[in-house]
Image 1 (cartoon, chains in turn purple, brown):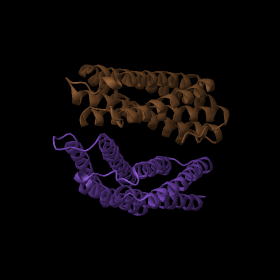
Image 2 (cartoon, chains in turn green, red):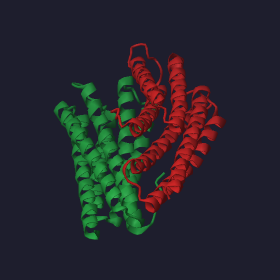
Image 3 (cartoon, one colour):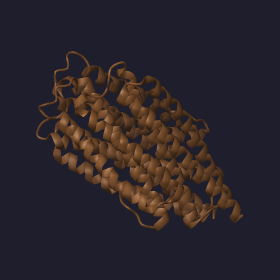
Image 4 (cartoon, chains in turn orange, green):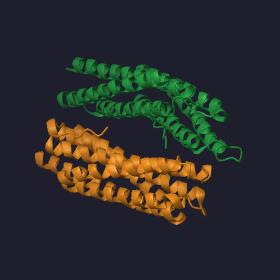
Length: 216
Length: 216
């Protein structure tokens, strides 16, 4: 029984890693769509995200089945409850990335990114992609040091998020309301995406070390 | 054992209702802060939200204890897993309301709401408050008809959300970038808040009737 359970837990972990890997792809395509007005990349991001939602639903069903069959307690129970939460967060990350892809679709053939904020959004999207890749590793190896590095990188995303508002609210901002709306929402999506990464990596740290890093 | 379990399930439900009731209060204070530049209401919203987060955490711990002690299966297990998800959604709703309160704090003594969008935001906030109150009833009585009514009302929130962008992106929009940023984010917070209400009421409908209303 214990062996079956261990192999079931392993499957849950592998599926989380797989979903996390898809989230990286969705974000890569979505940010390329956003930064280079590429509609085909946007469409691909939306498609992969649909498939990923189904994967998350299927994972939730698997976790509920394991809970029913194995009646786990203590740490095993917490791992499974965390898996449900992590799956919800990963699904949300895919949706946030898709919002970026949708902005690109709305503005096509125009750009959603004004020149004055191009560098900021390039750094923000590179950071989010890096964070999502590290998260996949954290989920795969329960790498606690990497989870801590993630928390530091998220601070830079928050800084960039605030800097977007500084630029938009400064006297030098001459862009029209459409750009203002787009960059406000996009910046928020990047920031929330990174928040989810921190949140998930905190859960993994907690499960591995019992040490809780408060994220909010 | 079964009796203990039933009374434990009842406690979970009562706690969800209590948290949902606090979310109504947070939103009422936050929207008053937002619509009337009232900093004291904003501060109260933030305070109640902090307490509500603790309540949600305590509820999660209770659910995990019940799962460990009672090893529920079938519908009982799904009710408890849903309780974890509903508690996460309610916490998020409180956080979204607090973002509205924070906008009011940033703009004080000025207003975050331009005259041209005042009516829209008044209707949006009244709708969100009404939705949150109905949600409390749904959680209390598993009222499936009410859950369906919620879905219809959410459509009006989405309509208002879109109308904010129509106004902001029209040639008549003469407000500065600060107003554009504020109304973009505020509208998004109201819309996400209502999404969570729909999401939770769909879960209750599903648990009550087995009928799943796809929300996204």
